Amino acid sequence: MSTTLHRRPQPARRDPSCGSSLIEMLIALLVLSFGVLGMAALHGRALQYSLDTEDRNRAALLASEIVSTMWLNHSTTLPSATLSAWQSKVQNTTVSGLPNAAATVSAADSAGMVTVTVSWRPTTRSTASSSYQYITQVVLP
Image (cartoon, rainbow, N blue to C red):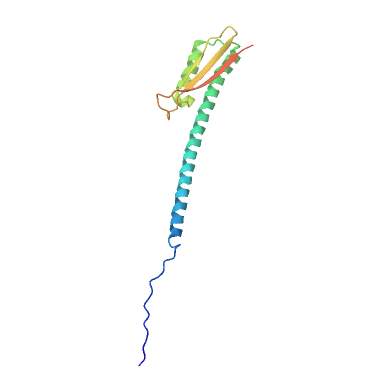
């Protein structure tokens, strides 16, 4: 009589590293998502700085325009019609490109210095926040 030994199947041993690659992938995905969110925030901030710089350049060009008019007239005192037309141009968003803009030209002081101020408030800022200003001073010889 021959006896056959039946071996009991042994339970499979679990590898201690089983599932660790899944955890590593989840952590890598988490780190990658933080990096992508950071890059998106950085891009948004760079875009905002670019728009602010564009507005400052527009304000500088508008101030330069009235200063050039003063140089052409050889006087810091401009006719009221010229000054009003320039201020209207600054306030008109479609012409100047500056949102919520206003402009002033001060009277000449004792040294003959005139201060040209262009102020604006971007539409992305709240009404409570202060507006931006570009100020230049002119003295004609």
